[in-house]
Length: 118
Image 1 (tube, rainbow, N blue to C red):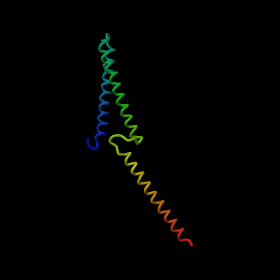
Image 2: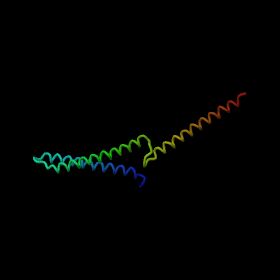
Image 3: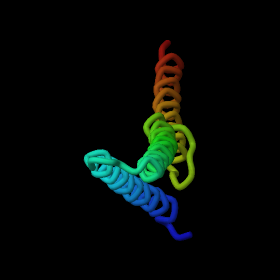
Image 4: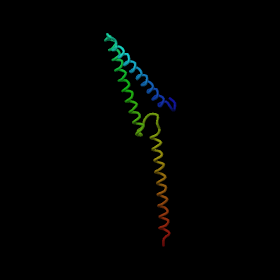
């Protein structure tokens, strides 16, 4: 996969979820249409209900997976396709080095002043 591989995969997963939601709506509409008939066919209703239930379960599972992934991203936990955590750690290390450099320079200045006093 290229640089955007994991991101593209997440978008494809969302597209699949969207398609599954369309199937849910279609199944619900078909079930309602069947129920509106004077003599609804029990087998047809059962088939639409099963398809509806299965699709809802798939959507729930996939959305839960997406939410877990987004939670990892938002909390800075390591996850596939992101170097944010590593970049943040590196920046914090640079900041600590700069702070240490300032403190050592201040300490050296204080030592020079102490040695210069009679």
